[in-house]
Image (cartoon, rainbow, N blue to C red; front, side):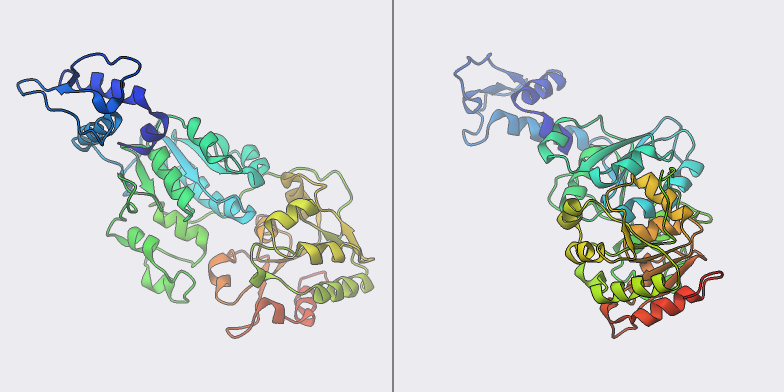
Length: 414
């Protein structure tokens, strides 16, 4: 029995399945309202009248029958690159960190181009809902994350023909199985049919890539011939059997409706190991101000920022710097993209704003953890990656190194 039926069923499920078996199993009598399912007896054609195990309710027997009936047909399985038909329905599941939606946009573009006429529904979360609903790359957007799980389960659509999942959390794996149903095709992490283990990957190069634990290793392109770059967007595209050049990020943009400072910065991130110290941001803001560059601070509203990201307290302190204009929470996400397009440069951690900036032609400096930069830094000409080397941390990067890299951009000097 597939997951969607399990969540939406109940005692009615038993009746539906029994009727659907077309006489293979029939209740001996209609139970009274006070009857427990454990007391019901069944009569099989041509057999005696075995009593149902008193420790197993009727609905469990119905589950077993449903599972046996489904296993005689096509099962939920791994997608292996076969052609898709116009009119098929596919779903894409990601985390709702800002960057997770952005890195999915190359795959979405490739999927649209290589599978015309296939519907594509997106399941992300409330943090990026403004972007996903405005994106022409998907036909619908559901905020999976930020919705109470039972609420989501009660509103499940009919099973999809296929599901692409970018997320490794237990909930994402379960949702992928729910969306795929009993017969859907799956790319990425997913619970198996019975919910005990994960659905096995295919024994081919995309399947082995999906299972590889060394995505940040410098030799990944040598180990996997399907990769031209080590960037995570390409890894996901090849796991989905998409071929050809990987396009750049594609994000909706809107007029910010305000004067945009020269240099935009973003100082919070999902992990403490990504954070650059407050005093270095302050030194950077002072140096930029001395050279005549106004600085704008991007981010969510402070209350939301502290709920989801690290560095929110230091960010609030930085917002009081005399050369920093606080833009947090004043722009929609498409307006943030528009503001980045209007700015002269962006300086940021490895976070969603870095990915936003890489969707534009604006010069951007990204501060990265060593090794992680190979996986998460997009291969675009306007990005300058700074890291502290194999033995260093983001916090070790000197402010002078960032200022020096800023000077290297044409038309910018400090």
